[in-house]
Length: 464
Image (spheres, helix red, strand yellow):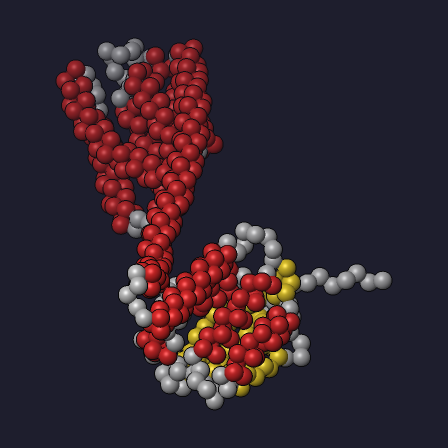
Protein backbone atom coordinates (compact mmCIF):
# COMPACT_ATOMS: atom_id res chain seq x y z
CA UNK A 1 0.00 0.00 0.00
CA UNK A 2 1.32 3.45 -1.00
CA UNK A 3 1.54 5.84 1.93
CA UNK A 4 -0.13 9.15 1.09
CA UNK A 5 1.01 12.56 2.16
CA UNK A 6 -1.43 14.20 4.64
CA UNK A 7 -1.98 17.11 2.22
CA UNK A 8 -2.93 14.63 -0.52
CA UNK A 9 -5.33 12.93 1.87
CA UNK A 10 -6.80 16.36 2.67
CA UNK A 11 -7.28 17.02 -1.07
CA UNK A 12 -9.24 13.78 -1.50
CA UNK A 13 -11.40 14.57 1.54
CA UNK A 14 -12.11 18.11 0.29
CA UNK A 15 -13.15 16.75 -3.10
CA UNK A 16 -15.73 14.60 -1.33
CA UNK A 17 -16.75 17.68 0.66
CA UNK A 18 -17.10 19.66 -2.61
CA UNK A 19 -19.48 17.04 -4.00
CA UNK A 20 -21.60 17.15 -0.84
CA UNK A 21 -21.61 20.95 -0.92
CA UNK A 22 -22.79 20.89 -4.54
CA UNK A 23 -25.88 18.91 -3.53
CA UNK A 24 -26.66 21.66 -1.03
CA UNK A 25 -26.14 24.25 -3.79
CA UNK A 26 -28.51 22.38 -6.13
CA UNK A 27 -31.22 22.28 -3.47
CA UNK A 28 -30.63 25.94 -2.57
CA UNK A 29 -30.76 27.01 -6.23
CA UNK A 30 -34.05 25.21 -6.81
CA UNK A 31 -35.59 26.81 -3.75
CA UNK A 32 -34.19 30.21 -4.76
CA UNK A 33 -35.56 29.94 -8.29
CA UNK A 34 -39.01 28.99 -7.05
CA UNK A 35 -39.08 31.83 -4.52
CA UNK A 36 -37.66 34.37 -7.00
CA UNK A 37 -40.23 33.42 -9.62
CA UNK A 38 -42.97 34.61 -7.29
CA UNK A 39 -41.25 37.98 -6.94
CA UNK A 40 -40.09 38.29 -10.56
CA UNK A 41 -42.70 36.76 -12.88
CA UNK A 42 -40.44 37.40 -15.88
CA UNK A 43 -37.74 35.12 -14.48
CA UNK A 44 -37.02 32.27 -17.00
CA UNK A 45 -37.74 29.41 -14.61
CA UNK A 46 -37.39 26.69 -17.26
CA UNK A 47 -33.78 27.43 -18.29
CA UNK A 48 -32.74 27.96 -14.67
CA UNK A 49 -34.18 24.60 -13.60
CA UNK A 50 -32.54 22.97 -16.62
CA UNK A 51 -29.12 24.34 -15.65
CA UNK A 52 -29.71 23.21 -12.07
CA UNK A 53 -30.66 19.74 -13.32
CA UNK A 54 -27.46 19.58 -15.38
CA UNK A 55 -25.48 20.45 -12.23
CA UNK A 56 -27.25 17.62 -10.39
CA UNK A 57 -26.51 15.16 -13.19
CA UNK A 58 -22.80 15.89 -13.43
CA UNK A 59 -22.53 15.95 -9.64
CA UNK A 60 -24.05 12.45 -9.57
CA UNK A 61 -21.41 11.36 -12.09
CA UNK A 62 -18.73 12.95 -9.90
CA UNK A 63 -20.07 11.15 -6.83
CA UNK A 64 -19.94 7.77 -8.60
CA UNK A 65 -16.42 8.43 -9.87
CA UNK A 66 -15.27 9.57 -6.42
CA UNK A 67 -16.67 6.36 -4.92
CA UNK A 68 -14.69 4.30 -7.42
CA UNK A 69 -11.55 6.24 -6.56
CA UNK A 70 -12.15 5.56 -2.88
CA UNK A 71 -12.30 1.84 -3.63
CA UNK A 72 -8.76 2.15 -5.05
CA UNK A 73 -7.40 3.72 -1.89
CA UNK A 74 -3.73 3.02 -1.37
CA UNK A 75 -2.97 2.25 -5.03
CA UNK A 76 -1.74 5.75 -5.90
CA UNK A 77 -4.52 6.27 -8.48
CA UNK A 78 -6.45 8.66 -6.23
CA UNK A 79 -3.28 10.62 -5.53
CA UNK A 80 -2.59 11.09 -9.25
CA UNK A 81 -6.14 11.74 -10.44
CA UNK A 82 -7.52 13.87 -7.58
CA UNK A 83 -5.97 17.22 -8.76
CA UNK A 84 -7.32 16.71 -12.30
CA UNK A 85 -10.68 15.68 -10.88
CA UNK A 86 -10.82 18.86 -8.79
CA UNK A 87 -9.95 21.06 -11.78
CA UNK A 88 -12.74 19.50 -13.88
CA UNK A 89 -15.28 20.05 -11.10
CA UNK A 90 -14.32 23.68 -10.53
CA UNK A 91 -14.32 24.37 -14.29
CA UNK A 92 -17.82 22.97 -14.76
CA UNK A 93 -19.05 24.85 -11.70
CA UNK A 94 -17.80 28.13 -13.18
CA UNK A 95 -19.61 27.49 -16.47
CA UNK A 96 -22.79 26.49 -14.61
CA UNK A 97 -22.68 29.60 -12.40
CA UNK A 98 -22.19 31.88 -15.44
CA UNK A 99 -25.18 30.17 -17.09
CA UNK A 100 -27.30 30.75 -13.97
CA UNK A 101 -26.20 34.40 -13.87
CA UNK A 102 -27.06 34.80 -17.57
CA UNK A 103 -30.62 33.52 -17.15
CA UNK A 104 -31.10 35.53 -13.95
CA UNK A 105 -30.26 39.08 -15.11
CA UNK A 106 -26.71 38.79 -16.38
CA UNK A 107 -24.60 41.78 -15.40
CA UNK A 108 -27.48 43.04 -13.24
CA UNK A 109 -27.42 39.97 -10.96
CA UNK A 110 -25.67 40.77 -7.66
CA UNK A 111 -24.94 37.08 -7.04
CA UNK A 112 -21.92 37.31 -9.32
CA UNK A 113 -19.94 37.53 -6.07
CA UNK A 114 -20.53 33.78 -5.74
CA UNK A 115 -17.65 33.41 -8.21
CA UNK A 116 -15.37 34.25 -5.28
CA UNK A 117 -16.32 31.00 -3.54
CA UNK A 118 -15.08 29.00 -6.52
CA UNK A 119 -11.81 30.91 -6.47
CA UNK A 120 -11.39 30.15 -2.75
CA UNK A 121 -12.11 26.46 -3.40
CA UNK A 122 -9.54 26.46 -6.20
CA UNK A 123 -6.94 28.10 -3.93
CA UNK A 124 -7.54 25.42 -1.30
CA UNK A 125 -7.63 22.41 -3.61
CA UNK A 126 -5.20 23.32 -6.39
CA UNK A 127 -1.71 24.66 -6.81
CA UNK A 128 -1.10 28.41 -6.81
CA UNK A 129 -0.64 28.50 -10.58
CA UNK A 130 -3.78 26.45 -11.19
CA UNK A 131 -5.87 28.61 -8.84
CA UNK A 132 -4.66 31.77 -10.64
CA UNK A 133 -5.71 30.27 -13.98
CA UNK A 134 -9.12 29.48 -12.48
CA UNK A 135 -9.53 33.11 -11.34
CA UNK A 136 -8.51 34.30 -14.78
CA UNK A 137 -10.97 31.87 -16.41
CA UNK A 138 -13.78 33.03 -14.11
CA UNK A 139 -13.15 36.69 -14.98
CA UNK A 140 -12.95 35.80 -18.69
CA UNK A 141 -16.26 33.89 -18.62
CA UNK A 142 -17.97 36.74 -16.78
CA UNK A 143 -16.68 39.32 -19.24
CA UNK A 144 -17.66 37.04 -22.16
CA UNK A 145 -21.22 36.83 -20.79
CA UNK A 146 -21.42 40.62 -20.53
CA UNK A 147 -20.03 41.19 -24.05
CA UNK A 148 -22.21 38.56 -25.75
CA UNK A 149 -25.34 40.02 -24.11
CA UNK A 150 -24.23 43.54 -25.03
CA UNK A 151 -23.57 42.51 -28.65
CA UNK A 152 -26.83 40.59 -28.94
CA UNK A 153 -25.21 37.21 -29.43
CA UNK A 154 -27.10 36.05 -26.36
CA UNK A 155 -30.49 37.32 -25.22
CA UNK A 156 -30.56 39.45 -22.08
CA UNK A 157 -33.04 38.48 -19.40
CA UNK A 158 -33.90 41.70 -17.63
CA UNK A 159 -35.16 41.67 -14.06
CA UNK A 160 -37.13 44.91 -13.63
CA UNK A 161 -36.83 44.89 -9.87
CA UNK A 162 -33.02 44.79 -10.11
CA UNK A 163 -32.22 47.20 -12.93
CA UNK A 164 -33.57 49.19 -15.85
CA UNK A 165 -34.05 47.25 -19.13
CA UNK A 166 -31.19 49.14 -20.82
CA UNK A 167 -28.65 48.83 -17.99
CA UNK A 168 -26.85 45.95 -19.70
CA UNK A 169 -26.00 48.31 -22.59
CA UNK A 170 -24.53 51.06 -20.40
CA UNK A 171 -20.81 50.92 -21.21
CA UNK A 172 -19.78 52.84 -18.09
CA UNK A 173 -21.75 50.47 -15.90
CA UNK A 174 -20.39 47.42 -17.75
CA UNK A 175 -16.81 48.66 -17.46
CA UNK A 176 -17.25 49.28 -13.74
CA UNK A 177 -18.79 45.86 -13.15
CA UNK A 178 -16.14 44.16 -15.23
CA UNK A 179 -13.31 45.92 -13.40
CA UNK A 180 -14.86 45.28 -9.99
CA UNK A 181 -15.46 41.57 -10.56
CA UNK A 182 -12.08 40.98 -12.21
CA UNK A 183 -10.13 42.79 -9.48
CA UNK A 184 -12.21 41.06 -6.78
CA UNK A 185 -11.54 37.62 -8.23
CA UNK A 186 -7.80 38.19 -8.67
CA UNK A 187 -7.42 39.72 -5.21
CA UNK A 188 -9.43 36.88 -3.68
CA UNK A 189 -7.17 34.38 -5.42
CA UNK A 190 -4.01 36.17 -4.31
CA UNK A 191 -5.12 36.45 -0.69
CA UNK A 192 -6.52 32.91 -0.48
CA UNK A 193 -3.47 31.38 -2.17
CA UNK A 194 -1.13 33.29 0.13
CA UNK A 195 -3.00 32.15 3.23
CA UNK A 196 -3.24 28.57 1.99
CA UNK A 197 0.48 28.54 1.08
CA UNK A 198 1.39 29.66 4.59
CA UNK A 199 -0.96 27.08 6.11
CA UNK A 200 0.52 24.36 3.93
CA UNK A 201 4.05 25.41 4.88
CA UNK A 202 3.12 25.27 8.55
CA UNK A 203 1.45 21.94 8.01
CA UNK A 204 4.62 20.66 6.36
CA UNK A 205 6.68 21.94 9.30
CA UNK A 206 4.32 20.31 11.78
CA UNK A 207 4.42 17.12 9.75
CA UNK A 208 8.23 17.09 9.74
CA UNK A 209 8.28 17.77 13.47
CA UNK A 210 5.71 15.02 14.03
CA UNK A 211 7.68 12.57 11.91
CA UNK A 212 10.87 13.53 13.74
CA UNK A 213 9.16 12.98 17.08
CA UNK A 214 7.76 9.66 15.89
CA UNK A 215 11.21 8.57 14.73
CA UNK A 216 12.75 9.60 18.05
CA UNK A 217 9.91 7.88 19.88
CA UNK A 218 10.61 4.68 17.95
CA UNK A 219 14.32 5.00 18.69
CA UNK A 220 13.57 5.49 22.38
CA UNK A 221 11.24 2.50 22.36
CA UNK A 222 13.90 0.39 20.67
CA UNK A 223 16.49 1.61 23.18
CA UNK A 224 14.13 0.83 26.06
CA UNK A 225 13.47 -2.60 24.61
CA UNK A 226 17.21 -3.24 24.38
CA UNK A 227 17.66 -2.01 27.95
CA UNK A 228 14.90 -4.33 29.13
CA UNK A 229 16.53 -7.23 27.30
CA UNK A 230 19.92 -6.33 28.78
CA UNK A 231 18.40 -6.11 32.24
CA UNK A 232 16.78 -9.52 31.80
CA UNK A 233 20.05 -10.96 30.52
CA UNK A 234 21.99 -9.34 33.38
CA UNK A 235 19.57 -10.72 35.97
CA UNK A 236 19.71 -14.18 34.41
CA UNK A 237 23.51 -14.03 34.25
CA UNK A 238 23.84 -12.95 37.88
CA UNK A 239 21.43 -15.67 38.99
CA UNK A 240 23.34 -18.31 37.03
CA UNK A 241 26.75 -17.14 38.27
CA UNK A 242 25.51 -17.08 41.85
CA UNK A 243 24.24 -20.64 41.47
CA UNK A 244 27.51 -21.79 39.90
CA UNK A 245 29.60 -20.16 42.63
CA UNK A 246 27.47 -21.44 45.52
CA UNK A 247 28.20 -25.14 44.91
CA UNK A 248 32.05 -25.04 45.10
CA UNK A 249 32.08 -22.47 47.90
CA UNK A 250 29.61 -24.57 49.91
CA UNK A 251 31.67 -27.70 49.34
CA UNK A 252 34.87 -25.93 50.45
CA UNK A 253 33.21 -24.61 53.61
CA UNK A 254 31.77 -28.03 54.47
CA UNK A 255 35.15 -29.69 53.99
CA UNK A 256 36.90 -27.12 56.15
CA UNK A 257 34.26 -27.34 58.89
CA UNK A 258 34.60 -31.13 59.06
CA UNK A 259 38.39 -30.89 59.13
CA UNK A 260 38.63 -28.09 61.68
CA UNK A 261 35.90 -29.64 63.87
CA UNK A 262 38.02 -32.72 64.52
CA UNK A 263 35.38 -35.12 63.26
CA UNK A 264 37.72 -36.88 60.83
CA UNK A 265 40.70 -39.18 61.09
CA UNK A 266 44.02 -37.84 59.77
CA UNK A 267 43.59 -39.88 56.58
CA UNK A 268 40.09 -38.51 56.04
CA UNK A 269 41.34 -35.01 56.79
CA UNK A 270 43.89 -35.26 54.01
CA UNK A 271 41.22 -36.52 51.61
CA UNK A 272 38.84 -33.72 52.62
CA UNK A 273 41.56 -31.11 52.12
CA UNK A 274 42.26 -32.50 48.66
CA UNK A 275 38.55 -32.24 47.85
CA UNK A 276 38.50 -28.66 49.09
CA UNK A 277 41.54 -27.92 46.98
CA UNK A 278 39.88 -29.41 43.90
CA UNK A 279 36.73 -27.38 44.51
CA UNK A 280 38.86 -24.28 45.03
CA UNK A 281 40.60 -24.95 41.73
CA UNK A 282 37.18 -25.40 40.11
CA UNK A 283 36.11 -22.07 41.60
CA UNK A 284 39.30 -20.44 40.33
CA UNK A 285 38.67 -21.83 36.84
CA UNK A 286 35.14 -20.43 36.92
CA UNK A 287 36.37 -17.00 38.02
CA UNK A 288 39.00 -17.04 35.29
CA UNK A 289 36.40 -17.95 32.66
CA UNK A 290 34.02 -15.27 33.94
CA UNK A 291 36.76 -12.68 33.60
CA UNK A 292 37.47 -13.95 30.10
CA UNK A 293 33.78 -13.76 29.26
CA UNK A 294 33.63 -10.21 30.60
CA UNK A 295 36.52 -9.23 28.36
CA UNK A 296 34.78 -10.87 25.40
CA UNK A 297 31.68 -8.76 26.07
CA UNK A 298 33.78 -5.61 25.72
CA UNK A 299 35.27 -6.46 22.34
CA UNK A 300 34.94 -3.52 19.95
CA UNK A 301 35.17 -1.00 22.78
CA UNK A 302 38.87 -1.41 23.53
CA UNK A 303 40.24 -0.35 20.16
CA UNK A 304 42.96 -3.05 20.35
CA UNK A 305 42.04 -4.63 17.02
CA UNK A 306 44.95 -5.05 14.64
CA UNK A 307 46.00 -7.49 11.91
CA UNK A 308 46.67 -10.86 13.57
CA UNK A 309 48.22 -13.96 12.01
CA UNK A 310 46.08 -16.82 13.28
CA UNK A 311 48.73 -19.34 12.22
CA UNK A 312 51.27 -17.82 14.60
CA UNK A 313 48.75 -17.73 17.44
CA UNK A 314 47.79 -21.35 16.74
CA UNK A 315 51.42 -22.46 16.80
CA UNK A 316 51.94 -20.97 20.26
CA UNK A 317 48.76 -22.56 21.61
CA UNK A 318 49.60 -25.99 20.18
CA UNK A 319 53.04 -25.93 21.81
CA UNK A 320 51.34 -25.43 25.19
CA UNK A 321 48.61 -28.03 24.59
CA UNK A 322 50.68 -30.77 22.94
CA UNK A 323 52.09 -32.08 26.23
CA UNK A 324 48.60 -32.36 27.69
CA UNK A 325 47.44 -34.26 24.58
CA UNK A 326 50.44 -36.63 24.70
CA UNK A 327 49.89 -37.31 28.40
CA UNK A 328 46.39 -38.49 27.50
CA UNK A 329 47.70 -40.56 24.57
CA UNK A 330 46.03 -38.35 21.95
CA UNK A 331 47.31 -37.59 18.48
CA UNK A 332 47.23 -33.80 17.94
CA UNK A 333 47.62 -32.95 14.26
CA UNK A 334 47.87 -29.43 12.80
CA UNK A 335 47.24 -28.55 9.15
CA UNK A 336 47.85 -24.92 8.17
CA UNK A 337 47.57 -23.73 4.57
CA UNK A 338 50.75 -22.24 3.02
CA UNK A 339 49.18 -18.80 2.78
CA UNK A 340 46.69 -17.51 5.33
CA UNK A 341 45.75 -13.83 5.39
CA UNK A 342 45.67 -11.96 8.70
CA UNK A 343 42.40 -11.06 10.44
CA UNK A 344 41.53 -7.85 12.24
CA UNK A 345 41.30 -8.85 15.91
CA UNK A 346 43.10 -8.93 19.25
CA UNK A 347 45.87 -11.53 19.52
CA UNK A 348 44.98 -12.37 23.13
CA UNK A 349 41.36 -13.00 22.20
CA UNK A 350 42.39 -15.24 19.31
CA UNK A 351 44.61 -17.21 21.69
CA UNK A 352 41.57 -17.69 23.92
CA UNK A 353 39.56 -19.02 20.94
CA UNK A 354 42.18 -21.62 19.99
CA UNK A 355 42.80 -22.58 23.63
CA UNK A 356 39.15 -23.18 24.43
CA UNK A 357 38.47 -25.19 21.28
CA UNK A 358 41.58 -27.39 21.53
CA UNK A 359 41.35 -27.90 25.33
CA UNK A 360 37.71 -28.96 24.94
CA UNK A 361 38.73 -31.47 22.28
CA UNK A 362 41.45 -32.87 24.55
CA UNK A 363 39.17 -32.95 27.58
CA UNK A 364 36.32 -34.84 25.89
CA UNK A 365 38.34 -37.23 23.71
CA UNK A 366 39.21 -40.57 25.26
CA UNK A 367 42.79 -41.95 25.16
CA UNK A 368 43.86 -43.14 21.74
CA UNK A 369 41.75 -40.55 19.96
CA UNK A 370 42.72 -38.05 17.29
CA UNK A 371 42.42 -34.25 17.22
CA UNK A 372 42.94 -32.39 13.94
CA UNK A 373 43.33 -28.61 13.87
CA UNK A 374 43.26 -26.87 10.48
CA UNK A 375 43.52 -23.29 9.23
CA UNK A 376 42.89 -22.11 5.67
CA UNK A 377 41.29 -19.47 3.46
CA UNK A 378 37.90 -19.65 1.79
CA UNK A 379 37.21 -16.64 -0.42
CA UNK A 380 37.25 -13.53 1.77
CA UNK A 381 37.28 -15.58 4.95
CA UNK A 382 39.88 -17.25 7.14
CA UNK A 383 38.50 -20.55 8.46
CA UNK A 384 39.72 -22.41 11.54
CA UNK A 385 38.56 -25.92 12.47
CA UNK A 386 39.08 -28.27 15.43
CA UNK A 387 37.91 -31.83 14.82
CA UNK A 388 38.07 -34.70 17.31
CA UNK A 389 37.02 -38.33 17.73
CA UNK A 390 35.65 -37.71 21.20
CA UNK A 391 32.37 -38.54 22.93
CA UNK A 392 30.33 -36.27 20.67
CA UNK A 393 27.22 -34.26 21.49
CA UNK A 394 23.61 -35.42 21.41
CA UNK A 395 21.44 -33.84 18.69
CA UNK A 396 19.11 -32.24 21.26
CA UNK A 397 22.06 -30.63 23.05
CA UNK A 398 23.86 -29.34 19.95
CA UNK A 399 21.84 -26.07 19.62
CA UNK A 400 22.81 -25.12 23.21
CA UNK A 401 26.54 -25.85 23.21
CA UNK A 402 27.37 -22.14 22.87
CA UNK A 403 25.09 -21.09 25.74
CA UNK A 404 26.75 -19.78 28.88
CA UNK A 405 27.16 -22.43 31.65
CA UNK A 406 25.69 -25.21 29.52
CA UNK A 407 27.27 -28.67 29.74
CA UNK A 408 25.82 -31.76 28.13
CA UNK A 409 25.15 -34.81 30.29
CA UNK A 410 27.80 -36.85 28.45
CA UNK A 411 30.38 -34.15 29.21
CA UNK A 412 29.47 -34.10 32.91
CA UNK A 413 29.72 -37.89 33.09
CA UNK A 414 33.20 -37.96 31.52
CA UNK A 415 34.71 -34.84 33.16
CA UNK A 416 33.23 -33.53 36.38
CA UNK A 417 35.18 -30.28 36.34
CA UNK A 418 34.02 -27.72 33.83
CA UNK A 419 32.45 -24.28 33.81
CA UNK A 420 30.44 -24.44 30.59
CA UNK A 421 31.71 -20.98 29.63
CA UNK A 422 34.49 -21.77 27.15
CA UNK A 423 32.37 -22.16 24.02
CA UNK A 424 30.29 -19.12 24.97
CA UNK A 425 33.53 -17.13 25.07
CA UNK A 426 34.50 -18.46 21.63
CA UNK A 427 31.13 -17.52 20.13
CA UNK A 428 31.15 -14.00 21.58
CA UNK A 429 34.73 -13.31 20.44
CA UNK A 430 34.22 -14.59 16.90
CA UNK A 431 30.89 -12.83 16.33
CA UNK A 432 32.24 -9.59 17.80
CA UNK A 433 34.84 -9.50 15.02
CA UNK A 434 32.23 -10.09 12.32
CA UNK A 435 32.67 -13.84 12.05
CA UNK A 436 30.58 -16.95 12.63
CA UNK A 437 31.10 -20.16 14.60
CA UNK A 438 29.53 -23.53 13.90
CA UNK A 439 29.35 -26.92 15.61
CA UNK A 440 28.75 -30.35 14.10
CA UNK A 441 28.65 -33.50 16.15
CA UNK A 442 27.27 -37.00 16.47
CA UNK A 443 27.04 -38.79 19.76
CA UNK A 444 29.90 -41.26 20.15
CA UNK A 445 31.58 -40.23 16.90
CA UNK A 446 33.27 -36.94 17.73
CA UNK A 447 32.71 -33.27 17.09
CA UNK A 448 33.79 -30.59 14.65
CA UNK A 449 33.94 -26.93 15.67
CA UNK A 450 34.73 -24.36 13.01
CA UNK A 451 34.86 -20.60 12.89
CA UNK A 452 35.49 -18.07 10.17
CA UNK A 453 36.64 -14.47 10.28
CA UNK A 454 36.86 -11.87 7.50
CA UNK A 455 40.29 -11.19 6.10
CA UNK A 456 41.93 -7.98 7.22
CA UNK A 457 42.47 -5.45 4.43
CA UNK A 458 46.09 -4.58 5.01
CA UNK A 459 47.33 -1.70 2.80
CA UNK A 460 50.27 -2.50 0.58
CA UNK A 461 53.56 -0.73 1.41
CA UNK A 462 54.32 2.28 -0.79
CA UNK A 463 56.57 1.67 -3.77
CA UNK A 464 60.17 2.72 -3.35
